[in-house]
Amino acid sequence: MAGNKFRVSCLFLAVLFALALLAGCGAGGKEEKQAGGGEKGADKTYVIKLAHESPATHSKGVWAEDFKKAVEEKSGGKIKVELFHQGQLYASEEAGFQAVINGLIQMAIPSTGYVSAVVPQFQVVDLPMMFSSQEALYKFQDGDVGKELLAMLEPKGVKGLGYISNIPLDLFSKEPIVKIADLKGKKIRAHTRILESSIKALGGSAITMPASELYLALEQGIVDGALTTVTYAAPNKYYEITKHLTKVRISAIAYPVVMNLQFWNSLPDDLKKVVQEAVAEATKQNRQKLESQEANALKTLQEGGMQIHELAPEEHERWVKALQAVYDEYGKAIGQELIAKVRSIK
Image (cartoon, rainbow, N blue to C red; front, side, top):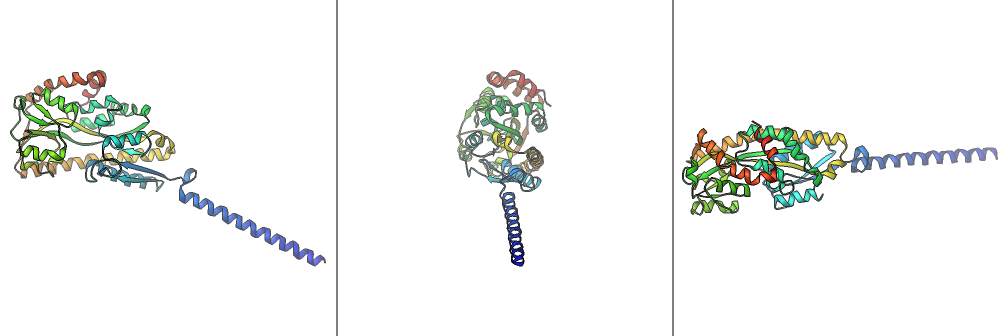
């Protein structure tokens, strides 16, 4: 009888031990699922949907690819980036920016012209001949004034992470334009309100039309010239229909990198740092690539027979003086103090 009790007790203990092992294995399996699925604590994974309207080969698209690579590597896979180039999610910059504000996606790269609809001070970047050089633009972006502008987005539910850039706008024309008097009566395509005001201040007539219609409009003489970048003009073979390029650098081009503020606040501090480092790395590459892209575009235009003109220093000053009317027009919305701060950056 005692032997039977001993055997029953041993069996009972063995069953308990087996159940304990099974419970342990079950808990381990559950933890692995959480780690793999990104559902808990430090093991959570985050997905960033980044949308923009430009092709993957555009400065925005190239920057986005570089950002994706950097942030996924630096985060060890804790952050995944889904890219939507060329309007796959939202056809316009405005719609993409609003989607970030509303939390429908996490990131976008709108132009300052669209961001200024929410924070008017961003128009300071688009003022004509504001920056003496591309390096001055970069100093603005990296410095306190650029950061102050980005901070103005936070009350709107947006985190400003930095800026990327493109080549400044130059003047393409059928006849040479090297003096302010050459613009009188000329029909010039402009694609923003500030550019329209700029052409008017210089004595020209601003014409608005989609970029897709511009080649034919230049060919048929509907317009006499256009403000665009050499990196846009070269692949679109503008040298076939316009034989003159004047390097006026009339407007800088910058794209604020924006993220939904609620999503930003949900990131652990270490991953916030990773995102900031990835933005900085992709932006550095953006600037390096722009130099070679501009050089290659200029070579293509020249080989196509286009003549390249520079404004003489005294003529440049005449343009700056004439364009003061644009500063007066937009100064109240932007703020004269901010304009003065940006103008002082050399």
